[in-house]
Image (cartoon, rainbow over all chains, first blue to last red; front, side, top):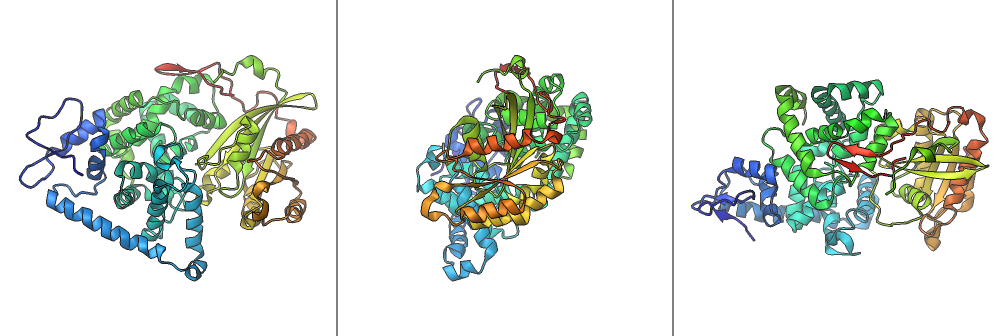
Length: 321
Length: 212
């Protein structure tokens, strides 16, 4: 089902429409679309299509026919990949320790991911099966990366939005193209991210940085969960969807999530400074903030910080994957 | 949630940091939730990085505040979780009695991590055999577990976070042992390592936390 509007239809103020050129169905005004998503979020009915654009599943400038062909290819390629592990016989599994490790880890996490959400709440539901399939198929697709805790948190919302296993898989694969290095064994990607966050805070709030330096908190490990799973555990499920699409749509930086992390710290700078929090204290603060953060003011601050950090901010994030 | 007032803290004699270690899925978070909130949720999300809870106990006429750190079992997060060992006076090593590999990993991995990153030479260690409610699915006997604990100089308790068997006992026994170890109490005064907040305010509103 498609939700495209034709460009002749006027864009409602404050909401998002997908406008396509009637002749070939090319998306027109992608930049405007991104700005709108970033500014006011995406209405749920359009989310599925918009995310495929934002995550780069559809190439820029693709025609309606090309997208339709792609959608078919996603289905058949996904089935081929999924078949690779579904067709394993027990004797074969018994000879592949790394596969068994990943499968066990996926099974453990699928049982405890977003079970409060209707899509995953029922034991043995199609949602749980689909999440398992997507994650295990990705293990086969990217054996070097394998499965790591946190991935199920990233995949679950994609399934809820896409409502289709194959599409959710390709969306997850696209997301892992960006975030995969955060899950590598040496956590190299996370080290870079935390380092960049440290530099951003140094730019936008030097007194806070000086404080964190004095209290030996520059590892920024208290922000680990925020960055690893893009604030998935810090906000309510639907807010996470708005947060993610704002990050993906943002044209000023590919790293809005880092500015958002800086915004969380800036918003709580008073309590950090006045309570004389140490490393443990900051960790406890970051854990205590889960579920208590207000997304919209933080997004506004994050956007403002992008402007405030300016060129220096771009230099900080330039080397990031 | 109520605001933690400073007055409550003033009657605390000791603040003690406890660390939960062990493979992913053995029930570290469930033990903590059972102990701190007397609840159990089979569907509790995996721990990313670290989680924590606070529990106050009275032991030997002393008011003790435990800050219990619940670390992620995921192997890839080890670089991160190793930083949380600092200052831990009690270490709880958890395995799952239905998965023998989780006991083996205590020996092969977690004990080594502890040797490398633990900062308190006299920290009290306890091995907890969790999920004893599994019945026929049990694969590790009491003897295997207690043998392992004895060889490594650890206390040993069998628990079930699910059916609430011996969870509080385990923590209490650990605390008793810590209180009997003078070297561990030298810097464990009431407010060491604690955060006391009257309330937590953000730039745009007031939060009401139990943040202790």
